[in-house]
Length: 83
View 1 (spheres, one colour):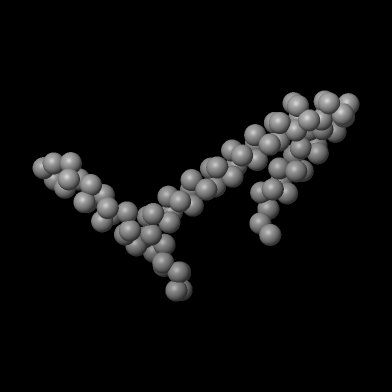
View 2 (cartoon, rainbow, N blue to C red):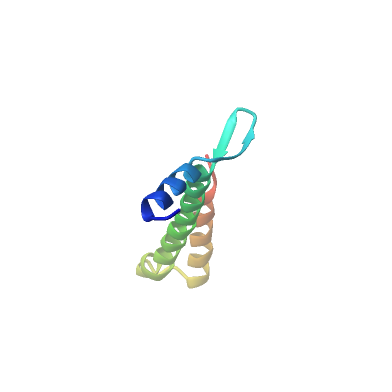
């Protein structure tokens, strides 16, 4: 790898490299990276929604802080559960 072009070619060949397979499903590095980014965004977004409910939405309606925390946590868990 003498220049940036060689490096990017090497990176591109590595990107689609098979890590392992389960049955007919093939897991590659790009699929693993997309999965990890998706999980991070899911947890980050649900935490933001929970915080929004607790700090802005529930106080407007006079909901007790303890009850608001409980409801917001349940909402977050429901958003994290798969169908």
